[in-house]
Length: 118
Image (cartoon, rainbow, N blue to C red; front, side):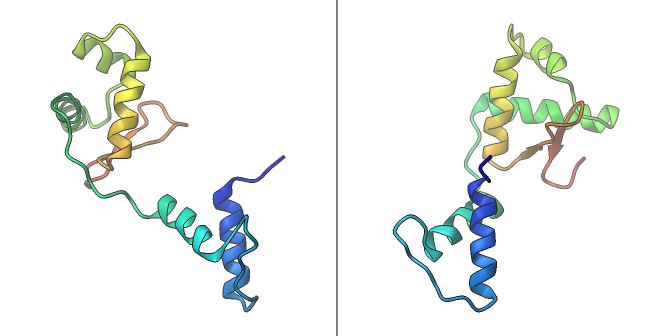
């Protein structure tokens, strides 16, 4: 079983921080590990939303405001007339990449707005 690149990078950076010499063996380097960690930890610069993404975000916010919880995939699909839940998933993934929501894959209605609203 292999460990994720992020976990390996963190372990090597901790060792370097604890006094081991800097490394660059061709496959891994201090600079490369820092890039892996920063991409995972620092959110991407917010990119502008498409019109459909803005509509979806407004629907999510309104549902959270009115009901106190995020809409389900089925509710989103019905509201926008999508035939496939994969379309909903794709739109939510794009919103997460742009940093306006966070997805909790282990929870029902696992959409969390990143601007402080549930």
